[in-house]
Amino acid sequence: MKVDEYNKKRAIFEYLKLLNKNGSGKMKASLSVAQIIFIDGGIWKARQIRHWSNYWLLHNALPISFQGKHQKTVRLIDDEDVAEKCHVWIRNQNYKVTPIKFKKFIEQNLLTQLGVSKKKTIDVSTAVRWLHILGYTKQRQKQGVYYDGHERADVVQYRNKFLSDIFEYEKLMSRYEGENMDWILPDLAEGEKEHILVTHDECIFYSNDGQRGVWAKNGELPLRKKGNGKSIMVSEFLTEIDGRLKLKPTDIEQYPTVPAEAREYLEPGKDREGYWTAENVLNQIKTKAIPIFEILHPNCIGIFAFDNSSNHAIFAKDALVSKRMNLNPGGLQPKMRDTYWGSDNKLQSMVFPDDYPHEKLRGQPKGLKQILKERKKWPIGGLLLECKECKEKKDDENRINCCARRVMSLEPDFLAQKGAIAEIIKKAGHKCIFYSKFHCELNFIERYWGAAKRHARENCNYSWAGLKQIVPQSLESVSLVTIRRFARKAWRYMDLYQKGIGGKLAEYAVKKYRSHRRIPDEVIEELNQIEFS
Ligand SMILES: [Zn+2]
Image (tube, rainbow, N blue to C red; front, side, top):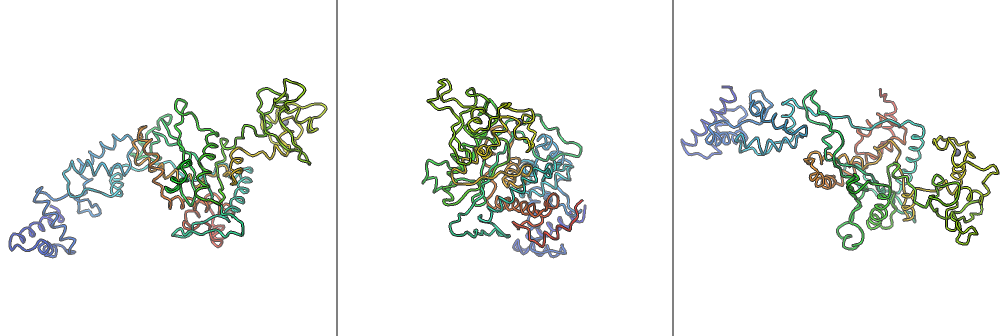
């Protein structure tokens, strides 16, 4: 018998003896026994003695200890039968074990099987410790900022422009600063409107996403299943002020025709709802994001920020895009909107008028040759529709007369043509910005997806039905304060990049100065002296 066990048994014996002998109160009896037997005998030990004694009377044994810090106590998990039960359960989970699921198993199955009735819950940290004792570690893919492409000349140039634009807007935005995220209103001049960043992105939740890291024994990593199973795509807008872009309950009553939230779901795959296209995003902006934003923030300007993807760069059907034009009239080319050109802003229709002499061409698109002729830009020798270099998208600013599409595309009205998203937003009186490519750390919604996916992983059984249920719950589980912290982190990155600090050094500083939206200048100076290998 170990000393620990001996002391416990002696304490029980003395305690029960005292109770029988003179009927003294349980408290008093247990306390005096605690003081006789244990060096640190006090109220806590006395309570334990009462617990051990009750347990002894019921089970004729000592209760199993949950503490494992000292050699002298026996941990439940050290028991071979217990460990085996855990191993069996973990193997049956097929690499989908998480500490939270393991904790639930211990509480709901294991402890009852073992007849432990007193202690009904354990900490997640205990579950983690047990997993480690059983030989499981979390093996994860590295997450973080990827630097591929950050230093490409075009990326650097775009990033600089993006940063200078967004910081110009930021002067007119509310900020959340300091440990307590104090709300600081912008300093607005007469007639200036508050600007609010409305960030957008799409994210796909897969039914067999698995965990980003799995709990597995060393060298026992499972292969990822091919394909990603069924999935749900979410397209959502966030602001620092509101979190998710949605109406307040009182607004819902007052504006029954406006959708309650901007979020949209889609189940991709041909046999279900089809694919999420640029049209879907446009529609969501027009019918949901803008109307909701304007109810929440009347008299404010939204800075709608999008990922720089091709899906977001599409043009309206009638936009001035030379690539969509043919040399000759008619055919399948689109009927484009009227435009103005030249120093005197002359109106030009892209379509032949209804009284055009050539009857067959009435109402038909004019085509490049006709349009350029009207602008006196059609050379005597004529032009190819599109030259080889243009077809291969080789960019050379000196090549200006190579083909009809190129000549047309360099006309000021064609150059000024904005994408469909930008047009809708501008028309509504708001502004639009596209994030720098390869820089997802600048869009704080990325971290929101990360948090929601973590929640989904911990709580989803990854069946199709389970996924449909868990995705909305997971999104709602990310709190407003958390969203604001994500936003502040993104601002911190932008601040560092603008001050010329990038890569690992920026990552380090972003983590170190958590409560800052901007990194103080003296710190920037210090940072510049750190060498990162
Ligand atoms: Zn060309």
